[in-house]
Image 1 (tube, rainbow, N blue to C red):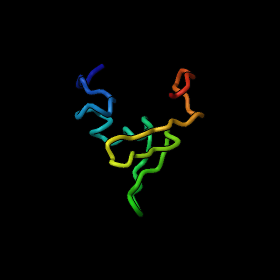
Image 2 (image 1 turned 60 degrees about the vertical axis):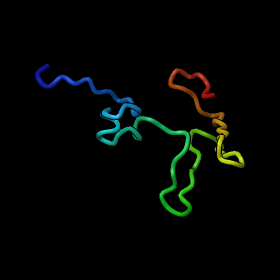
Image 3 (image 1 turned 60 degrees about the horizontal axis):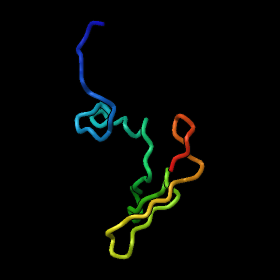
Image 4 (image 1 turned 45 degrees about the vertical axis):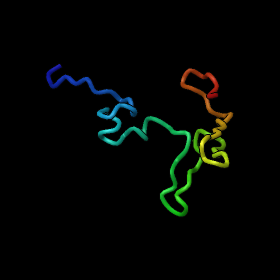
Length: 77
């Protein structure tokens, strides 16, 4: 096809990806938690059932939701 050829990807972890650059990454990729934009600015679990820091904030325990599966039907663990 006519037009520019680009090597960009939809990988949100690549700094120059289309998903990051154009801001649609959150539409096609779900996260473990969402940052609250109001109130205490804490997090709301999304694909995680719970997210808890240890007492000295050096470790994080994430418990995945049991009702989530990958696109191929495999459990999200």
